[in-house]
Length: 155
Image (cartoon, rainbow, N blue to C red; front, side):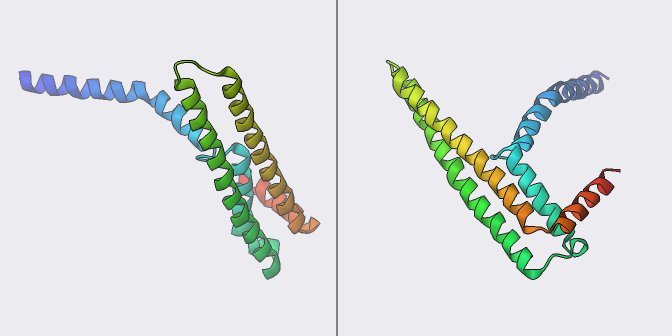
């Protein structure tokens, strides 16, 4: 009887721990998902729009040429995001290393932080430019159809 009660108590404790940890896990997942993994919400919007276009390419009546240009834009953006993210990551390591020193050179740290956010700004502008390019590839009719499909899926 004692063994059964202990198991039930252990099971209940594990359940309470899982329940209590859920908000923390969801917050971590949400932050990662919101950022597109290692990217940003803007980057997610580009790839979401790309996916919607590819999924509905027949309904949109995309030409082979349009498809080729859209795919190239995606791969070019993906490569550029990898490069820019790497630059930001390297700067984060440099900032951590500078802060680890016994005497922190705030001028150096400030400069590194400024550089990091210049790269982030450039990354955001690159993504915005890719979204604009993606929209330029489509005709007005295709853009209207894409919006129509988007609102149909929301209902």
